[in-house]
Every structure is written in structure tokens, then in C-alpha cells.
Length: 373
Ligand code: FE2
Image (cartoon, rainbow, N blue to C red):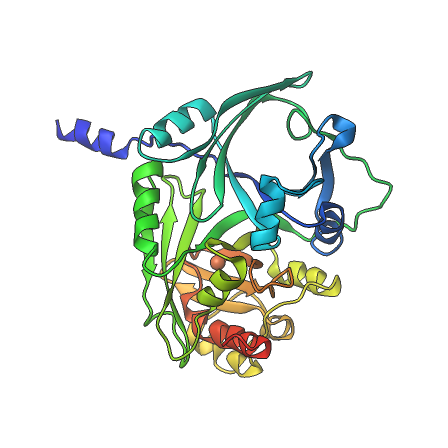
């Protein structure tokens, strides 16, 4: 009986194989695609637009290893995409999740209270079939479940392979989505934690309160939600009271609501990756060089030389299982909203708690420059 109960408890009603793609709604997808190819080393994959029978929008798909980005722009006014951009600026619309059965994923989540944004649909072309379904999450963000086991094409029906005369700069070593962080409003962290627990079967694996994540001026709280196999991790942040405005508040103000704060992309060689990204114009948050003075005393022995880490501004943190190296870009649009994290894990499964203070002081310096602290 006990075994049966345990099996029932451990049964994952929403098995996820990872992040399928991240879709951004942007003002100019052609230029955004150029940016992600040139600056981040993504490669051209697929295209949809008027030439492929899509009349009201254009999407470019770029890929690097297991990271797939979809950049979508509207061709007309007064539609869901145009309104999203008008309200939020460029930002993440869809965190798409890879599943074996998109119909089942939709049924399991909607019967537990998820609000549907897309009933299961079967898309077919000569390369096979993709099944999609979707549910709403925080703000105007959605999760799309993608079942592509019967598909052999470049991306999905409706898209054609995108060949471009432009010779893409080579990849920068980015491998897959490590985690995606959502910013939610005051007192909204726990309701969204409950949403991921109840509706998607996730577990809260780590929590940070405002004592962990605060500086002299501003604070935030965060809970990390993970699916059963750990392939999908969604930390959820909410602002906390401080002497001045929290970075989450600044985000909420300029994004006009809740949304994705950052996407963390994994690499196996952060020194190489960050060197490449910097040389291609990607801008990173800068911690004071004093951060490195006592780094090795804080984190112990690491495989990397200190000099390149210091030169490139790469941060290090250790937990019980190992250590991690990480670095955060500045926002990648003019609104102080979405940014990226580059992360290399060497055993550590945490999120760099030891770096929070140094980082948030760096963010506060940027906020102050913008007059938003
Ligand atoms: Fe992160």
C-alpha cells in the first residue's frame, strides 16, 4: 500500500524533456535575428512569413546546439502581437516545453486549473506532424507544449528552411536553456509557486528571502521551481521592501506587468563563450574588481585561472555539490527588462546566491544611471 502511494506520489503527470524553444515578440524580427546571430552566434534555421503563406506576421528561427529562439514580429496593427509589443516592448512571449504527448500535457494541466491559450492542434506537412497545445502563465507569458516525435523538418509545419547569404559568425559555445526566471508582482510569488506545483507538478527546490537577496537599498524574494527530472527550472521573483526601488519593481514598471526577467544559457567553457560574446559587442554587468580579491578564500580551489575570470568579469559561487561560474548581460533592449545569464555548472545545482549582493549592487548602479533607483 505504502509503495503504491509512493508510486502515485512520484508519478509525473507532466513529463518534460526540456525547453523546446523560447519565442520573443519583437518590433523588428529581421534585425533581432541578425543580433542573435552576430552577437550570440546563433545559426539560421527556419523562416515563416508571407512567402510561406503566413500573412500577418514574420518569424525567424535561430539555433545553437539545443537552444532555439523564435523571433516574431507583426506586419499589421491591432493584433495580439502588436499589442504585446506596444505594452511590453520586446520580450519573451512563449516558453515552449518539449513533451512526448502535447494533447495529454494540455489535458493534465487544464484539468488542474491551467487557463488554455491553445487547444491541441495537429500541424502537418511533407516532413510529418507536430502537435502543439498551450496554457497561460504569469503576465501575458504562455507555455506551449511541443510534440515533435513524428517530425523531421527544420522546425515545424508553416516554416521553411532559412538560408541566408550572410555568413553567420560561428557559434559561441552556448548549449541549452539552464533556467528561465519570471518577475511577478507584490505578493504574487507564492500564488505562482502554487500554480507550478498544482498545475504542472513542479517542486520548490530552493528559496531566497529578502535577507539573502538584499543590498543597502533594494531587495527581492525568489523561489526556484523545478519539474521532476530537473530539465526545466523556473525561479519566480517578487519585489521586496527596501530603502529604494527593487530591480523587480523597475522591471514591472517598464514591462508593464509580469514577465520573463532572464533566460540562463549554459556553456561548457565560460571563458571562451564570454570572450567571444564580449568581442561581438554583448554588454555585461560589471562587478568591482575588489570582488576578486578574496574570491578563492570564499569559493575554495577552482580549475580556472583567476586572471581571465577577472578580466572578463566572470563570477564564481560554490554550494555543497560543487561550484558554478556565471555572468549576466545588461538588458538586451532599451527598456530595463529582459537580459541573459551565461552559466557553467561544475557540480553546483544552485543559482549563485553568494554573488547576489555584488550583482545587485552592480544592477543598482545601472538603475541609478537610469534614474530608477
Ligand atoms: Fe539565473
